[in-house]
Amino acid sequence: MLAVHFGAGNIGRGFIGALLYQANYHTTFVDVNETIINEINRKQEYNVVLASEDSETLTVKNISGINSVANPDQVVEAITKADIITTAVGPNILAIISELIAKGLRERAKTNPKELNLIACENMIGGSALLKEKVFEHISEDEKATFNELYAFPNAAVDRIVPNQKNDDLLQVSVEPYFEWVVEETAIKGDKPEINGVTYVKDLKPYIERKLFTVNTGHSVPAYVGRYMGYATINEAMKDKNIQEIIEGALNESGEALIQTYQFDRTQHQAYIHKIIDRFKNPYISDEVTRVARGPIRKLGSQDRLVKPATMYLDVTGKEPIYLAKVIAAVLEYKNEQDDEAQKLQQMITEDGYEKTLQTVSGLESDHPLVKTVLKELEEIKELRK
Image (cartoon, rainbow, N blue to C red):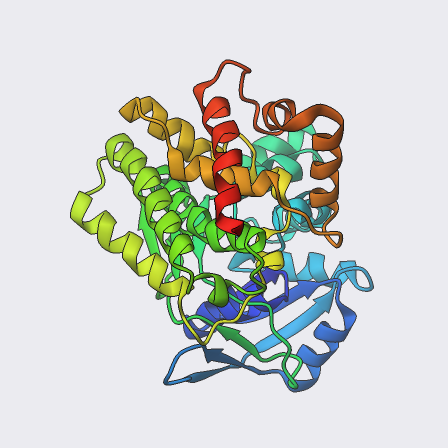
């Protein structure tokens, strides 16, 4: 079986690539990084090391690579033969790879009219739907019927911490032991891909939001509050009692919103929260707060990890989401000269002030109660620096 996977970075190799190998796929990695692709083709294997006390190692074999810039025709040919297509390129790159995927699918429809599932394994809601939208921008109206008949784009929720790292072995990647890959079963065409570790569900939205509003929301606390308090790494920040209190409070707020909205079992969700917090405390995973915090404007979006659960909590409880507001306040105070979005955010605040900037990036109306709560918490978080 052949898997074509777009994105040969740490997540692509350490998470999706590893599971595809264990499911007996030959995985062809597609990337623009010539050095990585050449190394994949030279070694034809790499090690995935679990960041834990046992430090188990999985050697991933049965792989090859294609440089999509230098050899786009090879990518098209691989797509015509693929049994599954996956991505782990980052939300902003889906549009960039969509034209080449469209060319491959067009050629496949002529030579191999077999059903195919394309699964975007991105840190976002509706990644596969976005990929489909972008692919369909590159085909004619006449082709759309054929594409809809043959190709499925089931959405997915993925979760695995792959920290920033430097290894002597270019291809080796360290990952946390825990992972979750949930796929929208109802959107699958043909037989479900048999990949051990994939959970198929009929309604994906609750699982996407559970992950986004627990893992991503939780990770934001040591990242932004940690940066505000002067910590360099997630591990350092998680040792601070104030941060422990804030992450517990924020995830209890987002958890209440999720429980009441999707009827998750309360006991099970509390256990999930504590598992997530323990993951951030893993001493074998060292991540810089600035890497986790990058892109603050996107993360203050109306549907993202902080504003959305905060508004949900307000809607279902009628109470102020104090801890989530505190984290949003820390994002507004986020400064990093190496982060373009952070620079832009601070420029907006300088020109327009906190209140208007928050409304602009979050889409909140001026009279929304969350705005008032965040402005109050902007004063409260100053105590964390004393």
